[in-house]
Length: 363
Image (cartoon, rainbow, N blue to C red; front, top):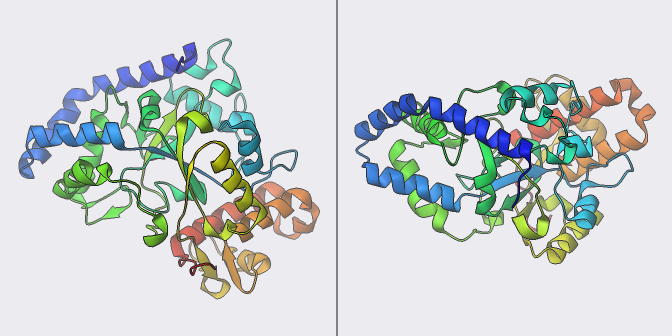
């Protein structure tokens, strides 16, 4: 697809940045490959497999309402386009997607001012996801949403990457043209910690084996796999250019709490309309009395108790609360401003991802 001047500038800026660190990255990788008895040929094949097979996952909450009280699922179904935060003005927490806002400033730093060039429109801004490398059934970065799209691998070639969240300004950045900084960071974590991108007991050897053989497989039904509960560790992807549900999205993996609901019906219709393969993962459900007070703050138990149904919370229940907050903000005034309560609900979702149990079959 044709990219705009700003999008090409952003891709080139990250490519040139990564090229400067190539020598240092290669030194790190060569040492680890030697220590791990991995040949250069095996490593090159593994990286090529990753580039050819790994999909970018885009997480979202399908039931969150926009300014017109239309859900994200409805907007996706009607428009067939996945939009960025500058267009939707939607966020799980505070919205900073405006000129001079926090997101605008960190994008300016990340992409060398590409999206501040004269004539750049909001629709040209990047969309954020994460590389679905380890194939976790709850997605590569579930903190950002209960459902996720998996994109065609071809989209990955017009994307930029950071090792961990770009908001933290990591030094490891790259594109598929210059991916060495990302791979060096990934290898180094597996070598020194035996943990990386949410996967425990991951060594350089097991990583290479996974890239060589597991990415080849067809998508297994995620309803048969245990969630990984990974909140903080991922290779973030910034997708440049338009994202069409019909042309670019291959799979939707949805949270089962939406089965049989209005949102779930829209997701099913959307997949039929745009020829997207639909799966349901195991979901997350948590008893109110199991909500901790020492993870994401002491207000979490009281919020969970307030919104719970039958003494449980799940993704659908949190979304229902977020919609009610938008519709009836004054009824939540005892907990703070709408922005503060929205932030609390986002943090409660993190609690649910971290501690939630799988939903029972059909439940």
